[in-house]
Length: 274
Image 1 (tube, rainbow, N blue to C red):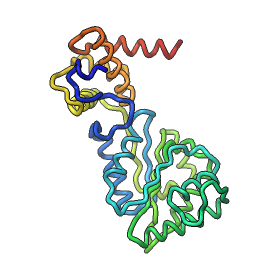
Image 2 (cartoon, rainbow, N blue to C red):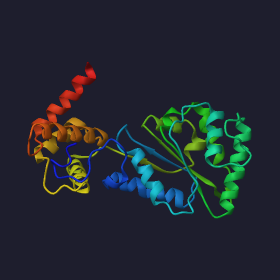
Image 3 (spheres, one colour):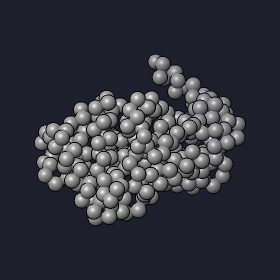
Image 4 (cartoon, rainbow, N blue to C red):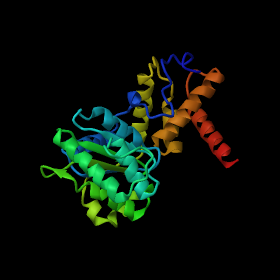
């Protein structure tokens, strides 16, 4: 709606995880490097934690794009809060396991056996599977974590046949610490932190340039205010910037001020409280 007014080729602050607009901040780049190491070196498990909105899902999407072709199949479990048997049956189906019919209820033992057979065949062909468990802090108790750990016992030539990447909020860390047999299999642990003030400035300018911006749009003081009200959470930064661009366009303004950012943030708070 406002792209032409601001001389943009696309919306710079959409709500989706667009990898084309990825800002290569230090924490995100380090996490991506560690995850690539874990998968490409065929280790058993990795951990990514961070508060909601810091970019965990975006990093895993980038990981999927940047892995070599021999790292597959790729399974992204986005809704892990299901009974253990259902979760394993889902994984078996996504791994294209022969002998498992879609919609047929399978026992945990059967699903684990079928997954193991498929992972071994996959490894024999020179490939390595990856399972990303998003929102892993919602997994259905110790039994499900233990079932996933069992998948790491399937090996080929002394190496795991799958890497499981657990992705979740910081509450996931104490859960794993109570399960030392699984925690010890985590070859890397990554914490995605909020953006600093300088990173917030760079993040906004990067996304604007990626969207085709031809001139500065946000005043420096506006970016300082943006960091203060968003606490450096990229999802909140996107939401505030998108709304500020819309309202400033409607009001015929030529730049985004600190006052505009603060007013937009206050409006969102008031709506949430109503």
